[in-house]
Length: 145
Image (cartoon, rainbow, N blue to C red; front, side, top):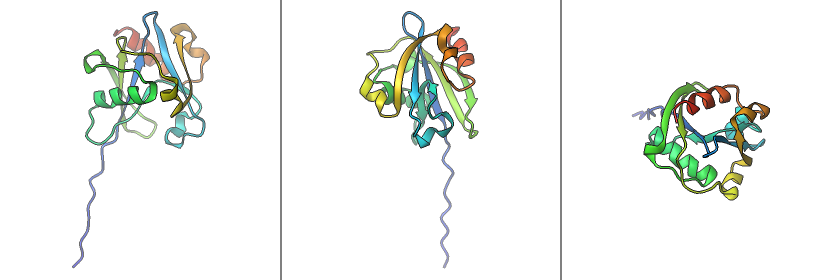
């Protein structure tokens, strides 16, 4: 008797958050150059976020990734969904904006997956090597918070 196991393809998605400080600066994290899990964005400055874990909602993934990558804490009601875009691999990326959060960026948390972080004035974001849609998303987020 032949037994065949059929695996259900796991739905893959990511969540990213555009964080604004009280003085309207945006949080950028510089991805490590040798991070194979983000090969498309290795070495680039980007937003807080990452892949969802099994069973997580987009907001839950955004909250977890925020804490893991920056040490900041955010409540679900403080995340404003502004868009759903497609990753280079074709899966959905849920984009949130946030101006209300707790804590300060923790350099040790950042260092796990990133080389650096900065709070950047919106008019200076274009001086950083970011994925091509970053500024468009920041402008959209700014009009939502």
